[in-house]
Length: 307
Image (cartoon, rainbow, N blue to C red; front, side, top):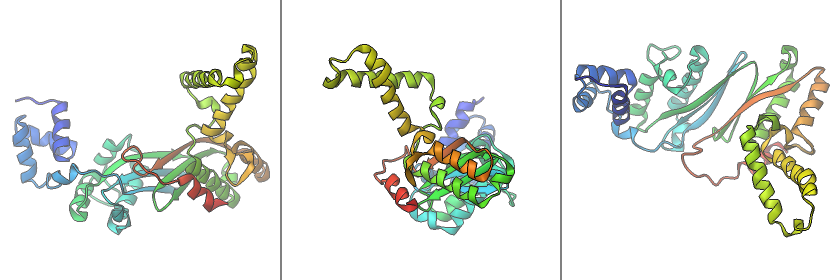
């Protein structure tokens, strides 16, 4: 009986086993799904089947920089207690090092990679940790940057930030640049900007936001008698700039000095260090975001740390 890629995917979801293990089982079972499950169970590969269905929204966000390469990765488990487990954290570190060494395109590719300093694949190692630790564990996502990279982890793995800068090797090697980079990363952790700069907003999203702002302006009784030209040329641009100050990193008020914005802080630092510095991109992972609701006020917490 023939089987398809969708069958392999379904078997993986049913058992929590790797793609290659599922493909081999289906081949051995001649495409019979139930028999393939039994084969995986007989081989001990589906021993973590029940655990694989449990919600994993805790765990940790971890960052690693080796040379000019940085990685931030989120690995989830069922309880935050596991994040204090040395074996779990060693596995997370191995995952990050493997991303740097093997440059996988995504989590699926990472699972297929041979782990650094091991004969096991990441997928095999993951299954072993699930059995040993006794909780469902999932590698959720990662990002890799190369160049002048700075990382920051807040709250013992609750938030992870990585920022890539465009500057010279000479400036990047200075202690003052490291402190500056940490300031920018902590800013991102605290205020969670959606974009780097206004020009990074997609045109359709900007138009959508302008339409919403225009509707708000027209619904405000104070603007009832104001000419359309004033609304379009003065009030709307002011509202758009206010939006940029909220969602764009370089336009945000600098947390450590509210009298300037991040753009000015970058320019001042570049001048002081004798060169040019530009924020190229950033990534911010918050543990469990999108998996469960969190009510912690991270902005206040991080801001209080850097005042």
